Length: 367
Ligand SMILES: Nc1ncnc2c1ncn2[C@@H]1O[C@H](COP(=O)(O)OP(=O)(O)OP(=O)(O)O)[C@@H](O)[C@H]1O
Image 1 (spheres, rainbow, N blue to C red):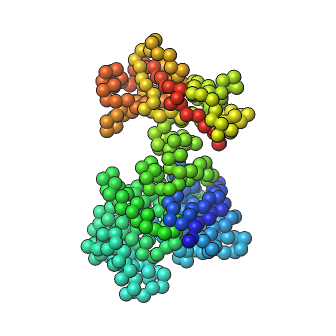
Image 2: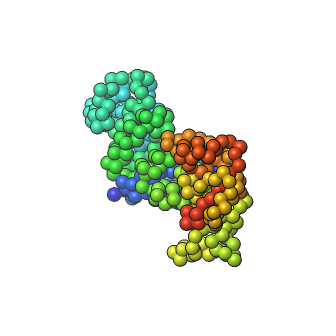
């Protein structure tokens, strides 16, 4: 079995990528991060389109890149299949020829390559499109052809660069389900760059969050969604996230860096000794659905977290309404459509926000 091991330092102008991680065979690692974080640089480095300046990349026992040993397998010789978000099919070749191309490059004969391509097209339910040109395909079909082309080369490593980004919402749903099935069948490690929270949460086994060329977080999708370490991921998964410092006098109270105070319940989790670190720097996460809006200061309640704000935006979701409230702290709040009508919430309305201490999650800030 061939796992991927990556220790890579790559400089591109002023930007530097510096990562160290591994992906087990048959596992999908999702790569997330804001624009310019280095996701494409990482993928191109693994594909053999960029060389590391220092470090070592191995796939099983095979060294793909190690400047120290003077080994560098370029893209044509690397057992990696790459799928781009814009498909990059050859427009003048038929679908069959596009998929057979991988075999031809690998030195397999024309007939063998075509037979292999046929098999893969059938497997991806694309047989009927074999003689079409890419211009005669829908986006979803073209993306599946691009996947067939990558898989037909029988790569040991699969690299997907935002594979569903160019598809409309409906097609994305269809192709996501199909891609997920094929990834489950794929025996080697898979890396998938994405900006889509659903892709990240349902198609991957682990997530690697990049920030300015470094790994900011690496964990299961559920753990990253529950306790993101930066605003980019928090926004992606729809959480309110606030950096702050715990009060020495009261370990459950956090003075937020952007203004305001939030209180969490209970004492520090003994499993998390970092929370008692001398700096006291923590992250505070609150789900938008855990915050309640009031049009007047609620006198009868005494929640530990109660603060005033002003509505700055309202967005209708399918069956909920997302309300952006400016205050200290500002927050995204999710309420029912009924509540918006009942409370007559509108942009500019003054409101009070409350949150139970038990719904406020504290964890160490690794930055
Ligand atoms: N050829 C290049 N020369 C110099 N710097 C580059 C080059 N290509 C990319 N960069 C820089 O490297 C950094 C990382 O770029 P990269 O494309 O890897 O980011 P990304 O995470 O894929 O972003 P996006 O989400 O926008 O695709 C950026 O600051 C970019 O400006």
